[in-house]
Amino acid sequence: MNQTRVFLIFAWLAVATLLWMEWGKERAAVGNTPATSAAALATQTPVGSVPSAGDGTPTVPNAPGMVAAAAPVKPVASDPVVTVATDVLRIEMTGGEIRQADLMGFPSEAAEGSAPVRLLDQAAGRYFVAQSGWAGNSAAPSHEAGFRPVGDARRFTLAEGAQSVQVPFEWTGAGGVTIRRTYTFTRGEYAVTVRDEVVNAGSQPWEGYVYRQLRREPRALSRGGPMNAEQYSYQGAAWYSAAEKYEKRDFEDIADDGPLNRQVTGGWIAMLQHHFFAGWIPQSDQASLFVLEHGAGQFEIESRGPAFNVAPGATAATEARLWVGPKLVKQIEAQGVPGLERAVDFSSYSIFATLGSWLFWLLDAIHSLVGNWGWAIIGLVVVIKLLLLPLSTAQYKSMARMRKFQPRMAQLKERYGDDRQKFQQAMMDLYKKEKINPVGGCLPLLVQMPVFLALYWVLLESVELRHAPWILWINDLTARDPYFVLPAINMAVMWAGQKLAPMSGMDPMQQKMMQFMPLVFGVMFAFFPAGLVLYWITNAGIGLAQQWYMTRKYADNAARA
Image (cartoon, rainbow, N blue to C red; front, side, top):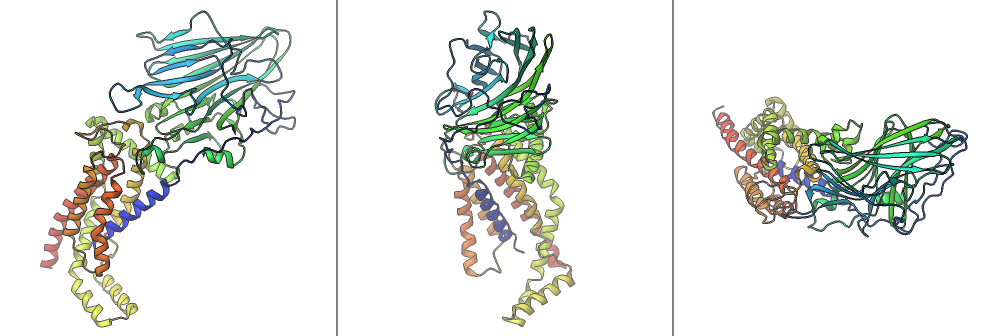
């Protein structure tokens, strides 16, 4: 089988599949839909359980400030704003809401001196906040009002040499119940620990449940060409439960697919976007109810629960982590939370997600040795080529044997003329007799197509490669080549491959179509991430050298046979 023909066919199928998978752009979210109404908490709620009705079925109690409001909730005068600065985060918050979060190690643009990425924000068009409060039968603080800073400090900074900084808040009700909330920010980490302790110093039982939610407006995506990475990355809600595993809905599906009422122990909820996300990770041994809401152009995912019935003189506590930051694989895995690694969305398709995680592990291991992501991509190709060397050797042997028997195939074609059935049968008999595998040259290509597609997702999603330079003019491997040099090199490599393996056996029309394929691929790859084009060129270049050597070697062997 002609290698160039097979290569181009499968490469074209790969690009067509990739474009089909990525063509579903994020559309404007459907707004102006009222939020779902819900029942209140039952009178009797077991301590540490999810809010439930008398028959034990989950209910969806309405937490304060649901997204049916026409505009973001404005802080009241009694909600002092506190600022927190660590080595990786700069935060503005109240006791119930983190309303602004800058990621200090991630500039918003590749240009020097660019402002840091602002992940959480209250500005119109970029609204994205993390909120937490209490609700229930008894008086309780909501995310809108109630929690007061402990002490006079309004600015907290992680001191040099310190490993963490704590930011305490407190609410005290008229019945003698106090809820103490402590945010703990840790050096080098994007996971913020939020601990609530309920202390009932009154004479009556206190009933309530904690809720934690993420609320946002869909982002206006940047424009940067038809294959701009952000245009095709996932944006929407995601959650994980032990029973159903990883699930997600983009903003349009939240509006169309109806409510989510999922009772979960542990798990996590998140709002994902390109390279970054925010997510609540409830205490692993406590139950809650995962809920999706939408309305007035805003979308919300919420974890409601656990609920507590705190007797006089008793205490109760609940803890969660809030991730506000980049999709750093190693830090996410270090949280030890089942399924949280899926927040790095290497694909909606599990096979590509799994393969993508393996490729990233290998890519990261090579990067730790060479210190540059561009050279790491080249190293990845070399490793893959070495792993596929036995298949490649078999491929070129098969091609050489096929060329050896071309004259006999021509004789068969002349003998049977237009009787294609007899010709095909005779050719298959020849293959069987001479032990020729007619598809032996395709196998390495079949193996590489999933690798190519999975690597596309890795380069699309890996924040580690964001703004990562290679050499000279390539300043961002996740963006397209600004001068189209790599696509031009790819065209030259494909053209050389065609010259090395002439397209004999094709009709004239097929030959003309194949001759245009380097140009077609050059235009296609002009809009792909530079790192992906680098992978493809390196793979094709090594393959071209391998083809030249192996073809000469086995062609000579075939001629002597």
